[in-house]
Length: 407
Ligand code: SF4
Picture 1 (cartoon, rainbow, N blue to C red):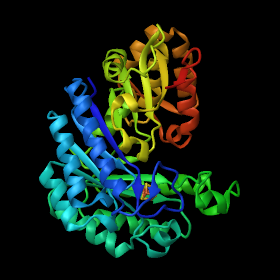
Picture 2 (picture 1 turned 30 degrees about the horizontal axis):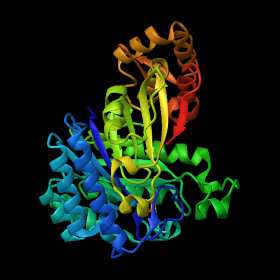
Picture 3 (picture 1 turned 60 degrees about the vertical axis):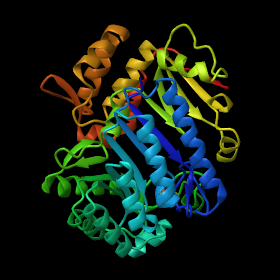
Picture 4 (picture 1 turned 90 degrees about the vertical axis):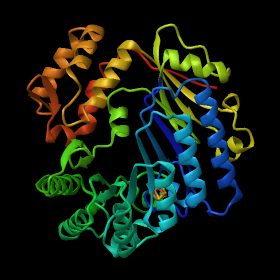
């Protein structure tokens, strides 16, 4: 059954200037917010009754801004996830500093959260204002320190190649985050996306602050500083002290099945799990005979989901993958990890995809995107910098078209 559970909260206090995630600015006291949380709790018990969460080991409440829900609602949702998936031993909540009150911290810890992922992005006030963040650096420092002090495992999200950022201010942000005692840091270059305030402002202008060379230099700067302070880079964007890796995210990159609930949440299920879900959601289409994997995305908006939370009322987009396509996808996801895809996974891909896989892997080694490390083929620094080429070449091994549908 699913190894990982994801719950999506599609609400934020305000939309950040760069964000194209599935979230909308919503007041925390909007009745829709409470009704949405109750709807998620109802869906949790429905999927638990189907046995889909029996083997679930990790859960993640993401968004959007889960901390915007406040202590009672977020604590209640964490408790509902615990009850529905009693085998979970890593449960993460995302939070933003401005809504991570002491009450929220106490409630999620009491309800059984083990980890917090806090959207800090920068510890420079001018940079934060440009990004459209609601918190300033002092608030971020104070709230991260409070989260660490209350005993939860804490991760900070930090963003580089942003407006006004310099090498020196980036170093201060990294140093500041480290000084707060966090055990995990995620580092991302800013992507200027269509449909965002930044996209409207800069479009295709390729501003100098976001130049690919600047992105690469800042990612390298982060690597040097974080590795120098005892953090291990275990994924292209993720650094952890020993024992602090995020197992939930590792599940995504190692082909483990996961189940997502809430507007725009995605699931990846094997056929047995898909058919089990279909028992309660008969609108799900009959899978093609060759399919071994189904990807589902919830298309129902928060209002409709609240009006009728039954699984049978959900609108979903679907993708069905054959065994060969799933193997290529697993290789591509595994290339995000420092260690690269597991040897067993490469052997399975070879058995399914034939000798063409060895030509592709040899070509990626020759181009310096992959390198042999012991019995594994792992991404190089260049491979991660040119991630689209590396991931694209591995996904191109997948034969045929993925079957897509809506229901
Ligand atoms: S808080 Fe996060 S999800 Fe919400 S708008 Fe900002 S970046 Fe997007």
